[in-house]
Image (cartoon, rainbow, N blue to C red; front, side, top):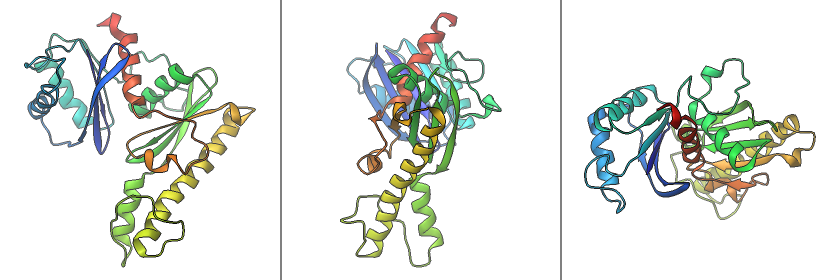
Length: 265
């Protein structure tokens, strides 16, 4: 079994692979204050419930792959692998790790590990050219060329950030549940805010992706658009450009990177 861990700014997603198949997954909050010991207890609690794994921490785990956008959490997870999974091969995605995807940006080291991992999975599953739209704390748009190169992207405020900002900065507004309203024209403040978020972000996705596609390919229709991230389902039905929804795209990419580096471990 391969344990994959994707640490985002808001949530951490864990996946358990049996070969190429993801057989279990969990989503927990990302807390930069958690120590390695606390993380180990949390992992034991989650994986102890799975019938394919043993009762002891590490039983049934043959490999670990980790990427993180929060450096302090990556540091603690590094300690978890050392202290609690010492005999298990582990790949932590950072500069020097083989991904198979050339990074054609001004400073490749500043590109988030999760964005590179998403590109790895997109190339493997769909080839290029492609655009990955990841709905997380930020909404990121990552471009992959026809030759499978990561060529850059776009970063915009995420859905939850926007909802919180409206609630904080609007004198008569408040934080709301992100849900599809009855109609585009809201009949009350909550529905008006929901409409602005859902249809506003769908319009943003369509506009940004169409512009990216024109730069990526002579025929924009050749570009495959892949949506991922925890908030993607909120926009899927309203965007006209999304071709595929891959909720575990980052975890799949982690599996691929682990396999490409396994011989070095």
